[in-house]
Image 1 (cartoon, rainbow, N blue to C red):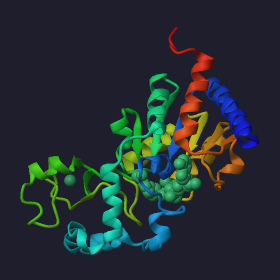
Image 2 (tube, rainbow, N blue to C red):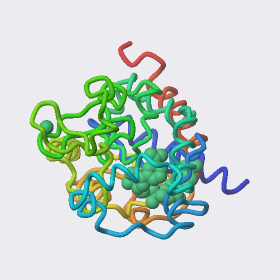
Image 3 (tube, rainbow, N blue to C red):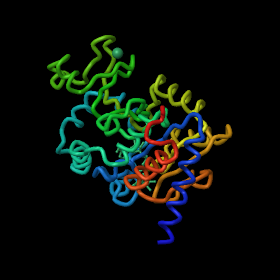
Amino acid sequence: MEMEIKKQKSISAAAKIIVQSRYTIALIGAGLSVESGIPTFRGAGGLWTKLGEPPNNGYENFLADPKAWWEQNLNSEVDPERTQFREAIEKAKPNPGHLALVNLEKLNILKHQITQNIDNLHHIAGSKNVTEIHGNRIKLRCVNCDMRWHRDEFDQIRLDWKQNLPPKCNTCLGIVKPDTVMFGEPIPFSTLNTCVNETRLADCILVIGTSATVYPAAGFPREVSSSGGKIIEINPEETPISEAATESIKGPTEDSLPKLVAEIKGIIGDDPTS
Ligand code: NAD
Ligand code: ZN
């Protein structure tokens, strides 16, 4: 009960900060999609808690032998745990947390979302201004020119790509890999650039469901606060960002985010233009 009162107080305080801010952005992590049935990597029940962290040289291995990498990737028998994770994402639907973020964007309060999630649920929910800093699992990307394709679209462009591994870019003949960023792989330049620019513009950042341990994403909240902006964290657990946060809403996003939106609507009225 006391916890609930404390949480409601943080939600009210956070809503006031957000309404008074000029440019609010969000940094999002795997916690947002837990309610959609997708496990996190590091928390209880996380994929890596079970399997151990993958080696740090994933990208190096890919570049060393892209053909072998693709052959293994297309053979789902090889790694049943990862196949299970993939299937969980395929079945997943946006949850009330994703929909709350769509609402905040429609109210013109949330200007941009930097998501570490690769599950495509922001787009399915209807969010528009989203940068997927770690890529999107339904896309493929050329390592040379950063051109991206939907997996299905790529299948159509190169019908025979499963026989001709590794797949090649139809513009520059560069090697094609999944859009998701591998360990040891640099974030594509234009993606990182957008994140840096949005972070510079922000005077408030919502840090949602992320353990804030993966760089460069984990550095954005500190950038905002070191230039005088506010951090609002929404997470059931403490993270390395918690002590720098102006407000911490301790609880799952599927519950806290809709409450936060309701509180904001209570302040500004339903129609932000009226
Ligand atoms: P993480 O696994 O390191 O941390 C998850 C965080 O979510 C933890 O701090 C945990 O306390 C919090 N959390 C758990 N349940 C929650 C809930 N219901 N509501 C709010 N928060 C909750 O995840 P990360 O910080 O995003 O970093 C891991 C990397 O793994 C990311 O880069 C991402 O690319 C990738 N990843 C993506 C997905 C996805 O697309 N859904 C899933 C797992 C991992
Ligand atoms: Zn290319």
